[in-house]
Length: 307
Image 1 (tube, rainbow, N blue to C red):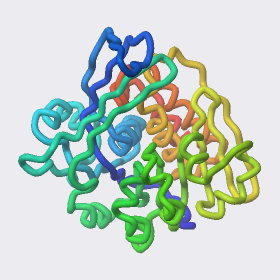
Image 2 (cartoon, rainbow, N blue to C red; image 1 turned 180 degrees about the vertical axis):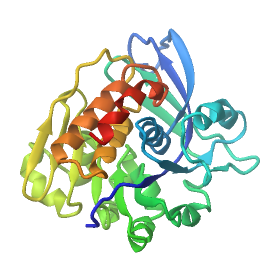
Image 3 (cartoon, one colour; image 1 turned 90 degrees about the vertical axis):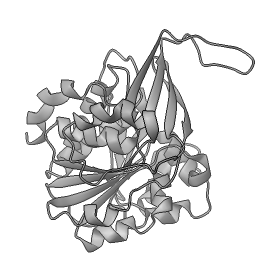
Image 4 (tube, helix red, strand yellow; image 1 turned 180 degrees about the horizontal axis):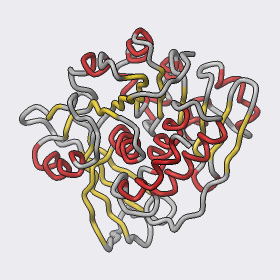
């Protein structure tokens, strides 16, 4: 495991145009129609959301991603450009490419997604992005991107970078026979509980399987929604309660948690403090509709990063 150190963070992964439907009485079911009170358009994808919250709390951050094609990219361009992220390594989709869009259905304490992927997950600037001399850490936003680019951890480690990975739900990738092999070279894994259980076929208490999954990654943080978060090492477990908030939309809360945790972890804070910061920023993300639509509200949390 490479010792984490403060510096610039590179977030990589797919970038989506999120169409967020909210004010919905229930999830749609086959043969019925449900009506939403509102529809918002926001930038989405774990790489962008984590990067936006990192930038909001004062962490130097780059994004390496491909803008969605056509009007979908234009619809989110202003939001991304105003997020305070280094976008030098982002590219536009090729002309004529299919749209890359997520329809998000937001209930008060849950959400569901319908997504269309298009083209490659990363632009051809990824090597250039990793060569940035200010960089100290690589954050991979979803297991599917790592499956497409399994050499990313080695590329990062060859440059002395620490590496974190979120999972993000993709049943085909999670259930693949070689899915766990993708975790080699990862320093910090940040799945939610459902993702971890599926990846390691866990039934019962996570603590009973701690040694098994920490053999693959030495530091595993499991996001548990309203039940907070737990941190596992090969020899210990730490739990942190969720922070009460007036939940409007949970979209992006896990990605915001990643930003809070990483900001403190890379600054050498105790693991318990990293969990607390993750929960703090994750809770902020639930107060507004859209994955990173409320990043300006966390600017007051900047002093906590170096506290």
